[in-house]
Length: 351
Image (cartoon, rainbow, N blue to C red; front, top):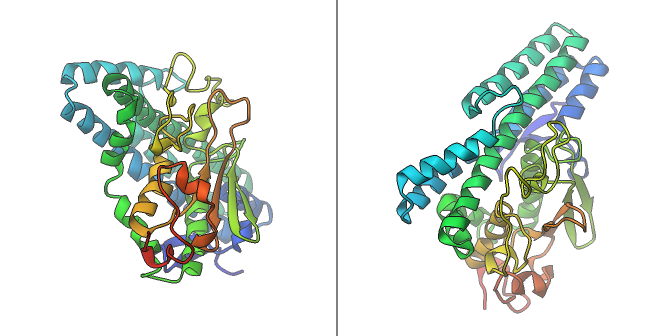
Protein backbone atom coordinates (compact mmCIF):
# COMPACT_ATOMS: atom_id res chain seq x y z
CA UNK A 1 0.00 0.00 0.00
CA UNK A 2 1.00 3.66 -0.20
CA UNK A 3 3.26 5.04 2.51
CA UNK A 4 1.05 6.35 5.36
CA UNK A 5 3.57 9.13 6.07
CA UNK A 6 4.71 11.94 3.76
CA UNK A 7 6.86 15.06 4.03
CA UNK A 8 5.03 18.40 4.10
CA UNK A 9 7.00 21.18 2.37
CA UNK A 10 5.36 24.06 4.26
CA UNK A 11 5.95 22.58 7.71
CA UNK A 12 9.19 20.88 6.61
CA UNK A 13 8.31 17.85 8.69
CA UNK A 14 6.69 14.43 8.29
CA UNK A 15 2.89 14.29 8.47
CA UNK A 16 0.27 11.63 7.96
CA UNK A 17 -0.68 11.17 4.32
CA UNK A 18 -4.42 11.00 5.05
CA UNK A 19 -6.93 13.49 3.70
CA UNK A 20 -7.34 16.47 6.05
CA UNK A 21 -10.77 15.21 7.15
CA UNK A 22 -9.18 12.00 8.44
CA UNK A 23 -6.39 13.67 10.41
CA UNK A 24 -8.43 13.44 13.62
CA UNK A 25 -8.07 9.68 13.97
CA UNK A 26 -5.52 8.54 16.53
CA UNK A 27 -2.27 7.25 15.04
CA UNK A 28 -2.27 4.56 17.76
CA UNK A 29 -5.68 3.39 16.56
CA UNK A 30 -4.51 3.31 12.95
CA UNK A 31 -1.41 1.33 13.92
CA UNK A 32 -3.51 -1.15 15.90
CA UNK A 33 -5.94 -1.54 12.99
CA UNK A 34 -3.02 -2.22 10.65
CA UNK A 35 -1.77 -4.96 13.01
CA UNK A 36 -5.22 -6.55 13.09
CA UNK A 37 -5.33 -6.44 9.27
CA UNK A 38 -1.90 -8.06 9.01
CA UNK A 39 -0.41 -4.91 7.44
CA UNK A 40 2.66 -5.05 9.64
CA UNK A 41 4.88 -2.77 7.57
CA UNK A 42 2.24 -0.03 7.67
CA UNK A 43 1.72 -0.61 11.39
CA UNK A 44 5.44 -0.21 12.09
CA UNK A 45 5.57 3.08 10.15
CA UNK A 46 2.56 4.41 12.04
CA UNK A 47 4.02 3.36 15.38
CA UNK A 48 7.27 5.12 14.56
CA UNK A 49 5.29 8.20 13.59
CA UNK A 50 3.49 8.20 16.96
CA UNK A 51 6.94 8.74 18.42
CA UNK A 52 7.53 11.67 16.06
CA UNK A 53 4.17 13.20 16.99
CA UNK A 54 5.29 13.25 20.61
CA UNK A 55 8.55 15.10 19.97
CA UNK A 56 6.94 18.53 20.33
CA UNK A 57 6.20 17.84 23.98
CA UNK A 58 9.53 16.10 24.42
CA UNK A 59 11.40 19.19 23.18
CA UNK A 60 9.25 22.05 24.46
CA UNK A 61 8.45 21.01 28.03
CA UNK A 62 12.08 20.92 29.24
CA UNK A 63 12.65 24.29 27.54
CA UNK A 64 9.57 25.80 29.19
CA UNK A 65 10.62 24.46 32.59
CA UNK A 66 14.11 25.93 32.29
CA UNK A 67 12.84 29.31 31.13
CA UNK A 68 10.16 29.51 33.82
CA UNK A 69 12.89 28.92 36.38
CA UNK A 70 15.02 31.63 34.75
CA UNK A 71 12.13 34.06 34.82
CA UNK A 72 11.40 33.49 38.49
CA UNK A 73 15.03 33.95 39.48
CA UNK A 74 15.39 37.03 37.29
CA UNK A 75 12.31 38.55 38.86
CA UNK A 76 13.66 38.14 42.36
CA UNK A 77 12.60 34.77 43.72
CA UNK A 78 15.33 33.52 46.08
CA UNK A 79 16.94 30.32 44.72
CA UNK A 80 16.22 28.45 47.94
CA UNK A 81 12.52 29.35 47.69
CA UNK A 82 12.35 28.18 44.08
CA UNK A 83 14.06 24.93 45.05
CA UNK A 84 11.60 24.33 47.89
CA UNK A 85 8.56 25.18 45.78
CA UNK A 86 9.71 23.00 42.92
CA UNK A 87 10.51 20.15 45.29
CA UNK A 88 6.97 20.29 46.64
CA UNK A 89 5.62 20.29 43.09
CA UNK A 90 7.68 17.26 42.08
CA UNK A 91 6.39 15.31 45.07
CA UNK A 92 2.93 15.68 43.55
CA UNK A 93 4.25 14.32 40.25
CA UNK A 94 5.56 11.02 41.57
CA UNK A 95 4.85 8.00 39.39
CA UNK A 96 2.08 5.55 40.35
CA UNK A 97 4.65 3.23 41.93
CA UNK A 98 5.86 6.07 44.18
CA UNK A 99 9.14 6.64 42.36
CA UNK A 100 10.38 10.11 41.45
CA UNK A 101 9.41 11.45 38.04
CA UNK A 102 12.30 11.63 35.58
CA UNK A 103 11.25 12.87 32.11
CA UNK A 104 14.39 11.48 30.46
CA UNK A 105 13.76 8.03 31.87
CA UNK A 106 10.12 8.26 30.83
CA UNK A 107 11.02 9.17 27.25
CA UNK A 108 13.54 6.33 27.10
CA UNK A 109 10.82 3.92 28.25
CA UNK A 110 8.55 5.24 25.49
CA UNK A 111 11.26 4.78 22.85
CA UNK A 112 11.99 1.22 24.03
CA UNK A 113 8.31 0.33 23.82
CA UNK A 114 8.07 1.70 20.27
CA UNK A 115 11.22 -0.23 19.31
CA UNK A 116 9.67 -3.38 20.77
CA UNK A 117 6.45 -2.71 18.85
CA UNK A 118 8.43 -2.31 15.63
CA UNK A 119 10.32 -5.57 16.27
CA UNK A 120 7.06 -7.41 16.92
CA UNK A 121 5.66 -6.01 13.66
CA UNK A 122 8.71 -7.17 11.73
CA UNK A 123 8.24 -10.63 13.26
CA UNK A 124 4.48 -10.48 12.53
CA UNK A 125 3.69 -11.21 16.18
CA UNK A 126 0.33 -9.51 16.40
CA UNK A 127 -0.49 -10.03 20.09
CA UNK A 128 2.92 -8.85 21.21
CA UNK A 129 2.71 -5.85 18.89
CA UNK A 130 -0.61 -4.77 20.39
CA UNK A 131 0.77 -5.11 23.91
CA UNK A 132 3.88 -3.09 23.09
CA UNK A 133 1.86 -0.37 21.37
CA UNK A 134 -0.31 0.11 24.45
CA UNK A 135 2.78 0.07 26.66
CA UNK A 136 4.23 2.85 24.51
CA UNK A 137 1.11 4.99 24.78
CA UNK A 138 1.02 4.49 28.54
CA UNK A 139 4.68 5.39 28.96
CA UNK A 140 4.24 8.57 26.95
CA UNK A 141 1.04 9.57 28.75
CA UNK A 142 2.71 9.28 32.16
CA UNK A 143 5.73 11.25 30.98
CA UNK A 144 3.82 13.83 28.97
CA UNK A 145 1.25 14.66 31.63
CA UNK A 146 3.80 15.10 34.40
CA UNK A 147 5.97 17.28 32.18
CA UNK A 148 2.96 19.43 31.34
CA UNK A 149 2.02 19.63 35.04
CA UNK A 150 5.57 20.70 35.86
CA UNK A 151 5.23 23.60 33.45
CA UNK A 152 1.76 24.48 34.75
CA UNK A 153 3.01 24.35 38.33
CA UNK A 154 5.83 26.78 37.59
CA UNK A 155 3.50 29.20 35.81
CA UNK A 156 1.18 28.96 38.80
CA UNK A 157 4.17 29.75 41.01
CA UNK A 158 4.89 32.83 38.91
CA UNK A 159 1.31 33.96 39.42
CA UNK A 160 1.48 33.46 43.17
CA UNK A 161 4.91 35.06 43.61
CA UNK A 162 4.70 37.91 41.09
CA UNK A 163 0.97 38.39 40.59
CA UNK A 164 -1.49 37.06 38.05
CA UNK A 165 -0.86 40.02 35.74
CA UNK A 166 2.67 38.69 35.05
CA UNK A 167 1.55 35.37 33.58
CA UNK A 168 1.57 36.80 30.06
CA UNK A 169 5.15 37.98 30.64
CA UNK A 170 6.41 34.59 31.74
CA UNK A 171 4.86 32.95 28.66
CA UNK A 172 6.53 35.57 26.47
CA UNK A 173 9.86 34.63 28.05
CA UNK A 174 9.19 30.92 27.62
CA UNK A 175 8.02 31.12 23.99
CA UNK A 176 10.20 33.90 22.58
CA UNK A 177 11.87 31.51 20.11
CA UNK A 178 8.49 30.31 18.83
CA UNK A 179 7.07 33.69 17.93
CA UNK A 180 9.12 34.16 14.72
CA UNK A 181 7.83 30.79 13.46
CA UNK A 182 4.45 32.47 12.97
CA UNK A 183 5.97 34.42 10.07
CA UNK A 184 5.93 31.37 7.80
CA UNK A 185 2.16 31.91 7.51
CA UNK A 186 2.41 35.44 6.17
CA UNK A 187 0.81 35.96 2.78
CA UNK A 188 4.04 37.67 1.81
CA UNK A 189 5.61 34.19 2.07
CA UNK A 190 2.97 31.89 0.54
CA UNK A 191 -0.71 31.83 -0.49
CA UNK A 192 -3.07 31.61 2.47
CA UNK A 193 -4.66 28.43 1.06
CA UNK A 194 -1.36 26.60 1.52
CA UNK A 195 -1.03 27.98 5.03
CA UNK A 196 -4.53 26.83 5.97
CA UNK A 197 -3.73 23.25 5.03
CA UNK A 198 -0.45 23.39 6.93
CA UNK A 199 -2.14 24.88 9.99
CA UNK A 200 -4.67 22.05 10.06
CA UNK A 201 -1.99 19.40 9.58
CA UNK A 202 0.29 20.90 12.21
CA UNK A 203 -2.48 21.24 14.78
CA UNK A 204 -3.73 17.71 14.19
CA UNK A 205 -0.24 16.24 14.43
CA UNK A 206 0.55 18.20 17.57
CA UNK A 207 -2.68 17.48 19.42
CA UNK A 208 -2.55 13.80 18.54
CA UNK A 209 0.95 13.82 19.99
CA UNK A 210 -0.41 15.36 23.20
CA UNK A 211 -2.82 12.40 23.43
CA UNK A 212 -6.03 14.38 23.15
CA UNK A 213 -9.46 12.80 23.45
CA UNK A 214 -11.47 11.20 26.24
CA UNK A 215 -9.46 7.95 26.16
CA UNK A 216 -6.10 9.74 25.71
CA UNK A 217 -5.32 8.00 22.43
CA UNK A 218 -4.92 11.18 20.38
CA UNK A 219 -8.40 11.44 18.87
CA UNK A 220 -9.64 14.86 17.74
CA UNK A 221 -12.53 16.15 15.64
CA UNK A 222 -11.68 17.72 12.27
CA UNK A 223 -14.60 19.39 10.49
CA UNK A 224 -14.56 21.11 7.11
CA UNK A 225 -17.03 24.01 7.24
CA UNK A 226 -17.75 26.51 4.47
CA UNK A 227 -15.67 29.32 5.93
CA UNK A 228 -13.18 27.49 8.17
CA UNK A 229 -11.69 24.27 9.40
CA UNK A 230 -12.79 23.40 12.94
CA UNK A 231 -10.75 21.21 15.28
CA UNK A 232 -12.27 20.14 18.60
CA UNK A 233 -10.44 18.46 21.43
CA UNK A 234 -12.40 16.50 24.04
CA UNK A 235 -10.21 17.36 25.86
CA UNK A 236 -7.01 18.83 24.51
CA UNK A 237 -4.30 16.50 25.78
CA UNK A 238 -2.12 19.24 27.26
CA UNK A 239 -4.02 22.06 28.98
CA UNK A 240 -7.54 20.79 28.46
CA UNK A 241 -6.96 17.54 30.34
CA UNK A 242 -6.08 19.53 33.49
CA UNK A 243 -9.75 20.50 33.89
CA UNK A 244 -10.72 16.83 34.33
CA UNK A 245 -9.87 14.02 36.74
CA UNK A 246 -7.36 11.53 35.33
CA UNK A 247 -9.34 8.34 34.80
CA UNK A 248 -6.25 6.16 34.35
CA UNK A 249 -4.48 7.24 37.55
CA UNK A 250 -7.42 8.42 39.63
CA UNK A 251 -6.00 11.89 40.22
CA UNK A 252 -8.22 15.01 40.38
CA UNK A 253 -8.44 18.00 38.08
CA UNK A 254 -5.29 20.09 38.49
CA UNK A 255 -7.22 23.02 39.92
CA UNK A 256 -8.16 20.85 42.92
CA UNK A 257 -6.02 19.61 45.84
CA UNK A 258 -3.32 18.43 46.08
CA UNK A 259 -2.33 20.44 43.00
CA UNK A 260 -4.34 23.62 43.39
CA UNK A 261 -3.04 25.15 40.16
CA UNK A 262 -4.49 28.54 39.32
CA UNK A 263 -6.84 29.92 36.68
CA UNK A 264 -7.38 33.50 35.66
CA UNK A 265 -9.41 35.45 38.22
CA UNK A 266 -9.47 38.68 36.22
CA UNK A 267 -9.70 39.67 32.58
CA UNK A 268 -6.47 39.91 30.59
CA UNK A 269 -5.76 40.41 26.88
CA UNK A 270 -3.42 37.39 27.01
CA UNK A 271 -6.26 35.15 28.25
CA UNK A 272 -9.07 36.18 25.90
CA UNK A 273 -10.30 38.60 28.60
CA UNK A 274 -11.94 35.57 30.16
CA UNK A 275 -11.95 34.46 33.77
CA UNK A 276 -11.41 30.82 34.72
CA UNK A 277 -8.83 29.95 32.02
CA UNK A 278 -6.09 27.63 33.26
CA UNK A 279 -2.74 29.41 33.43
CA UNK A 280 -1.20 26.79 31.16
CA UNK A 281 -3.88 27.19 28.46
CA UNK A 282 -3.32 30.92 28.12
CA UNK A 283 -0.18 30.30 26.05
CA UNK A 284 -2.46 29.43 23.12
CA UNK A 285 -3.90 32.94 23.25
CA UNK A 286 -0.40 34.36 22.75
CA UNK A 287 0.85 31.84 20.19
CA UNK A 288 -2.29 31.42 18.08
CA UNK A 289 -3.86 34.87 18.27
CA UNK A 290 -2.09 37.86 19.85
CA UNK A 291 1.40 37.35 18.42
CA UNK A 292 0.15 36.48 14.89
CA UNK A 293 -2.11 39.57 14.95
CA UNK A 294 0.90 41.69 15.91
CA UNK A 295 3.22 40.13 13.32
CA UNK A 296 0.84 39.28 10.45
CA UNK A 297 -2.33 41.28 11.02
CA UNK A 298 -4.59 38.27 11.69
CA UNK A 299 -4.81 35.28 14.09
CA UNK A 300 -3.74 31.88 12.83
CA UNK A 301 -6.22 29.90 14.88
CA UNK A 302 -9.16 31.29 16.83
CA UNK A 303 -9.48 29.43 20.12
CA UNK A 304 -12.59 28.88 22.24
CA UNK A 305 -11.02 27.62 25.48
CA UNK A 306 -12.70 25.77 28.32
CA UNK A 307 -12.99 27.51 31.68
CA UNK A 308 -13.01 26.48 35.34
CA UNK A 309 -15.34 25.55 36.97
CA UNK A 310 -16.14 23.35 34.02
CA UNK A 311 -19.93 23.25 34.11
CA UNK A 312 -20.05 23.98 30.39
CA UNK A 313 -17.74 21.09 29.52
CA UNK A 314 -14.04 21.00 28.79
CA UNK A 315 -13.92 20.79 25.02
CA UNK A 316 -11.57 23.23 23.32
CA UNK A 317 -12.31 24.41 19.77
CA UNK A 318 -9.87 25.86 17.23
CA UNK A 319 -11.07 27.57 14.04
CA UNK A 320 -8.77 28.09 11.07
CA UNK A 321 -10.49 30.48 8.68
CA UNK A 322 -10.13 29.93 4.94
CA UNK A 323 -9.72 33.69 4.40
CA UNK A 324 -8.25 35.97 7.09
CA UNK A 325 -10.97 38.55 6.33
CA UNK A 326 -13.55 36.03 7.60
CA UNK A 327 -12.17 36.05 11.15
CA UNK A 328 -14.90 37.70 13.26
CA UNK A 329 -14.28 41.09 14.80
CA UNK A 330 -14.88 39.66 18.28
CA UNK A 331 -11.81 37.43 17.89
CA UNK A 332 -9.69 40.58 17.73
CA UNK A 333 -11.55 42.54 20.38
CA UNK A 334 -11.30 39.87 23.08
CA UNK A 335 -7.48 39.87 22.87
CA UNK A 336 -7.19 43.65 22.95
CA UNK A 337 -6.81 44.20 19.20
CA UNK A 338 -8.86 45.76 16.40
CA UNK A 339 -9.79 44.00 13.19
CA UNK A 340 -8.29 45.73 10.13
CA UNK A 341 -10.64 46.83 7.34
CA UNK A 342 -11.52 44.12 4.82
CA UNK A 343 -8.60 43.33 2.56
CA UNK A 344 -6.03 44.88 4.87
CA UNK A 345 -5.22 41.66 6.73
CA UNK A 346 -3.52 40.19 3.69
CA UNK A 347 0.23 40.25 3.46
CA UNK A 348 0.59 41.07 7.15
CA UNK A 349 -0.65 44.64 6.72
CA UNK A 350 -2.94 45.97 9.44
CA UNK A 351 -4.66 49.30 9.96
